[in-house]
Length: 156
Ligand code: CU
Image (cartoon, rainbow, N blue to C red):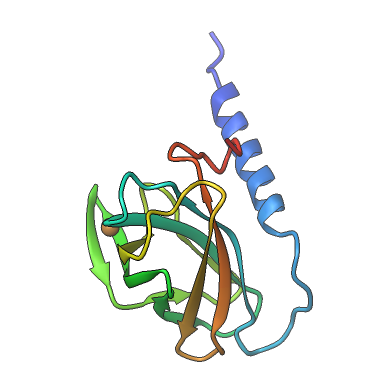
């Protein structure tokens, strides 16, 4: 019997396709400073205005590491940053954005936690966020509110 390798190969092919998708957009390279851009942001519609989660990806095309130090929005009284370790989430005060790398917030992993929302966000709304960094200037993100069960890999 030959060993079954099909599933491992399929996994590699999917990983490659995702890497190619993540690489689109942006411009320039070879700069030594951090060069940040934000993509793939969304908030699943929350059940109440008490708490909501948000996800995004920060890409650094530059040769210097930066650090996400705060996230604020006029729509929320407080936004905290959480990481997930072994199924338990922990609040952190900053996240590194590696040189020539990405900081990824995704369901089940790193996430933003919105509290004290002014209104319950509904699908179709947009939440405006301001991201602050240790080195780079602030970035503004227009985060769309998606359905409660939105899955970025299927787009539904
Ligand atoms: Cu959390």
